[in-house]
Image (cartoon, rainbow, N blue to C red; front, side):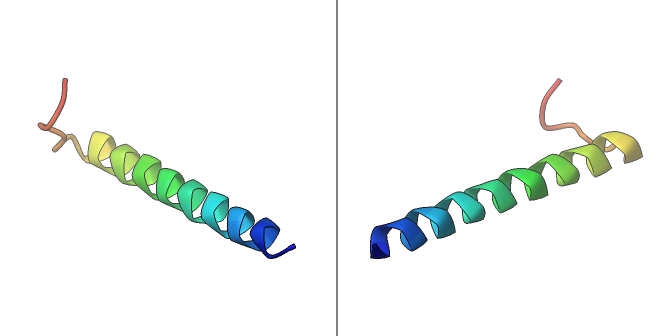
Amino acid sequence: MWYFAWILGTVMAILLAVVAAMSFDAKEDASGTSQTRH
């Protein structure tokens, strides 16, 4: 049952990266310095 823990860890890492990216984009949009995309 080792693959269950491996899949769970991978999903958690991906979710954490997505949440971090979303919060980072929100901070950039809030400060008004987001010039990378329109």
